Length: 297
Image 1 (spheres, one colour):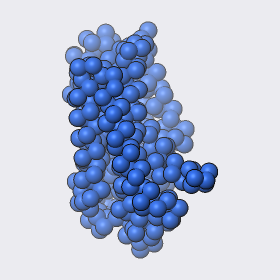
Image 2: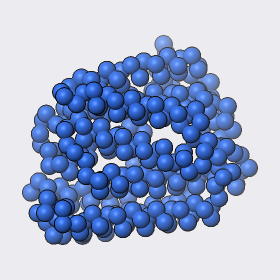
Image 3: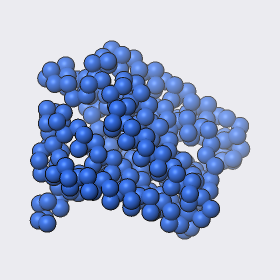
Image 4: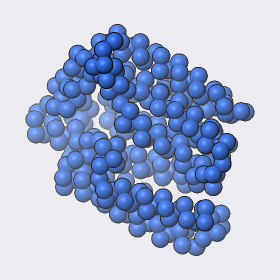
């Protein structure tokens, strides 16, 4: 196999998207086990399992979406859509990645190995259903995406044996729902500007609906976060009455993302925004440092 073919196979895996799987580290971080070597091993294995599972889904998605992707101004460059990787090769890679994802999920999780593997299986089943039909149903499609992030979070908690707080589950679902709706907005803009329908369900979305939805979700997410920061359960567990100060980082990040989505119309890839926008990166780093100081100093 040539170096060019290898590079295209790697592109098919979309390694840049593995950043989404960082959600599996949140239970360990907020549980106060950041310096526990055993926790790190279990969480890294859960992360690796989800990276392989996610890449398997990207292979399946690119195989199914290849005809539609060829009409998209950006997605037409994807390996399968452009013809640089054959559907057969993509199917083989899909199968191998699923086997590896499940094998890694069983490796070092002790009593919870079956539960972690079951969570990875649930993620795979949800996303296969998404590729085969759920993505064509407006609203259901974005809720399926958000649920996938909750499953990542659940796997991280199970790998470390840390029970999840209802707050972190709710905020993960709301935040990722917000990001998914912002991404749908990009598809509607492409339809408006070029007349190209990149997703069949974009006909069931409008800019007015999506702008209103983003505003509502941003507000609900922020209110949920504020309630989390002032709840007696949280302040007692963290031994800090000033957790609410971190709200400024969350508010700034949400407003910046809405600016990018609505004013600049650059909401097509949340991962790309996270990796390139300095303002949002600063908000995330300051937020993490704030909690690191509370939890570990």
